[in-house]
Length: 519
Image 1: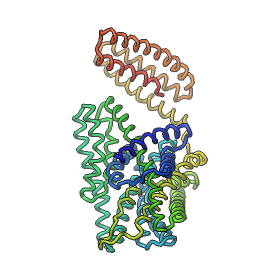
Image 2: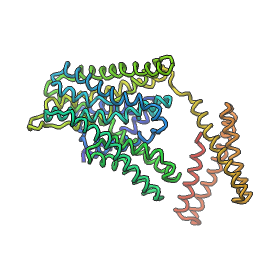
Image 3: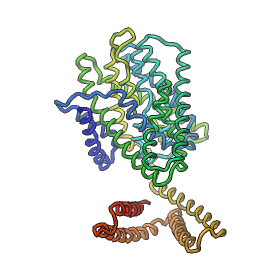
Image 4: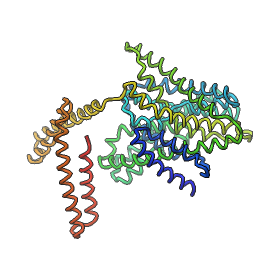
């Protein structure tokens, strides 16, 4: 019962924080972590411990699925080379550097310190996606940091499993490590592809909104569980499933169900992100109180490890970026590598790995310094989300990488113009074969011509003329919708129509009213 109360309290806290974050123009994940830490410091509050299964199985799959759905194959092909170097090379370098620093500044053995390094080696797709949603980054930069966080899991998970094996069992084999990596990466890709094929087959034959919603919500869990059941990477499987299904989304269902799924996913992601980022901050004071009983130092070590992760990332990213610029005949710049270096936040995936570290060795003894590893990992995650989260947007603005609103609006107008022109061309073909009466064809033509005229004005930079006309149209149309709503209410109260009919018609009016706010 207490766990339910904590989750409900976190949802309420997250709602308040989300409103505050929007008004303060700061990232909600960072503010949620701070709020969680402050709540955790309240005297008399019960200790909070997060079960690793809750993070890895309940929270992680849908959040990673949502981040992967936003990725496109076309964008991914443009950045696969630097993503590969970051997802493999940088993960190895980060794990080694953190292990060296942790061994030097704490009492941990070299193997335990390396275990901490593998926990913190990879960036987190959930944190990166959550922080990146409010940034207007160039598409290539956004794809780079998001793809890196999505695909570095196989490398970090392999290192993590090997480190756990060394610490718990004291064994290591290069042959076993190679086979393990092949299973993690390859098995995850295969499992994700199988689930995507099955789900696509089912959704093409389903038109029930409730079933579609259930299938969509179950998909990331099915992919994750299938991969983990064969000891492959569940995160990789979820990413592959998300990318494949995200590309096929328009062919899998109709517009109404897509609108419903968008609303459902938005709610689910908000709730899960709210709970998990709050829990990261909330459990840190509990872990620190328990660690203080053993008199082990953690503050200086966590700060040094956080600095080490940033330094290694900077040292890795800048030369890589400059080398690519030199090969492409371009002048090296500092802006893009600076933002990519600073965007390497840690979050949910490292937290799940830290909490899943075994309590005992194979000999039955308590795992040495396990509590210190969990505290340091959690503290570094909090530092990363707070420091990098609050300063990433100012850095993007200072670097001049913010995509202007005018460019985004012109791109939107261009897409609307080209689609309207394609529709008009198709309408002329239908008119030639007399597919419908002239009244119907003319009505369609008027709507398309209006879209084309407005699109041409926006693309040519005369958006103010369109805005003036549309403002008058919205005002008058909303006045008419209000009159329709009043009449609908009167018909229902007089008993001329049922409540079901009123609800259906009101939904149509609400959809039209909402559509007036679209750009």
